[in-house]
Length: 423
Ligand SMILES: Cc1ncc(COP(=O)(O)O)c(C=O)c1O
Image (cartoon, rainbow, N blue to C red; front, top):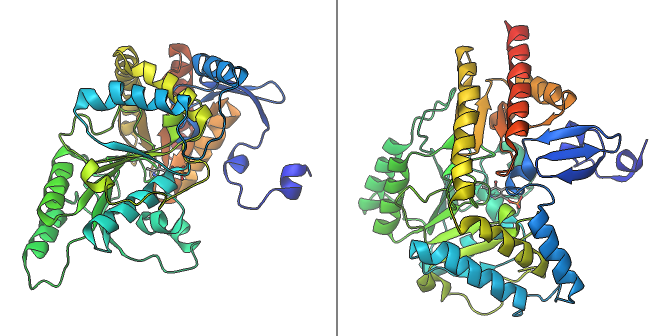
């Protein structure tokens, strides 16, 4: 017995997958209390895009604290907040001609989604939101209603309503997916909105991930996203892109939709936006929608936290030139080149974009065996997708080449072993 088994809630999950006590971390490595090192292909589920304990960010945070900078300020103006907002405007918004306002809320992704849903309902005066099969948007009731996974939904204990579920539009049909690409169903939905006697009313918003991360690394096709945007425009609904896991450089561009020719009304960001793992969530909201908020209507004690602004501002320096994004594109190619040959095994599919790649091994038990074997060999990797049958490769974008190579080798060896045992 130890304090965790004795006193920590039964709810603990990753602590069971990796049953050691982690003590130290640096870039793409974590070390446990016994001194064993692990390569991290999980990166806090997309939080640690710039690695554990990023030196530049740590230095900035330490200097800020030592200088007596304000640590907590609710949503008051601070120097740290101004510097973050100015840098975000200059580095991310202006080059894209985005006029969006920045809204800060409680520092979790689910809080960003809640705020986006509230605002879309306020702006349109409508209740229902369209969300997609295999979508994941968080655990609080509004966001959970948009999350598809039954395990999470069953925990709610109350009805999760005001959401219509439509098939997601994958670029490449996922193996085992009986739902089709979703383009046809969008066209059908559009026809129903156009038919005034269909009894189907247009929604407040379409809430979508361009790449469903928790849902199994399903990449939306550009054509499907474009169609979704068209329907949103025609029906007066808002297009909300949840870029919480795959934004902040993950796909080789700052936003996951940068090459998709869409113009979301609201973009939800969290996880990596705080740079160092210091929590922050932020919605980018078009000004014409933002004006529907009254002051203080969606609060949160930790909305805009100064250490996150300081670290987050440092993170933005990575986007002042193309060096990191070029590196991401090269590493992304390397990951695909190493993993794609595993598709020679029946029941294996590799899919992804940038540095988020899913290795779908078809069965949850097989995926679990691979996660456990990788862990024993010193690689942290997590599973996702229906029943957890997809291994999600989502290392820090800053992972050194040697660690990436070594981690991929462990993953391939463990997968080969599991496939041989299955044969
Ligand atoms: C796409 C997406 N949206 C929302 C969330 C919820 O974020 P949080 O766990 O910080 O509430 C997640 C978390 O994994 C996510 O991946």
